[in-house]
Image 1 (tube, helix red, strand yellow):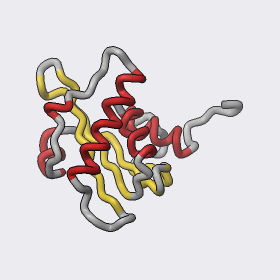
Image 2: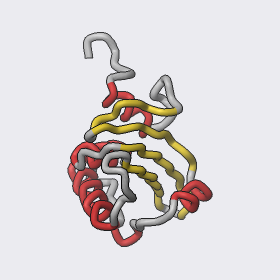
Image 3: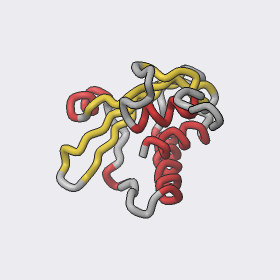
Image 4: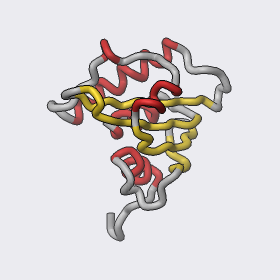
Length: 130
């Protein structure tokens, strides 16, 4: 799921901050919450932009795995406060034109799938010769 979120942000040339939350508090479902704040242009994310982002995440997931899918009917454009109250923080990253420019709160990249993937995109966590 983290790879799909990061791919969608790259495809959308997102500039700003992404906070990633996750948990399995619903039986049989792994729930992900994404908090986004654009810095360029400096305005709230629109419902149309969010809809495109959700569509890109779903398409990327379909390409990456036959076992994981996005339930668009349960995806909602909501408030970050609710996400923070019900899910665990799994990392944050700063983006410029779709590229990870800084991974926040992790130096090793092993804290979560999100930070590990974001660190790889940023260039951290590579072994010599990779």
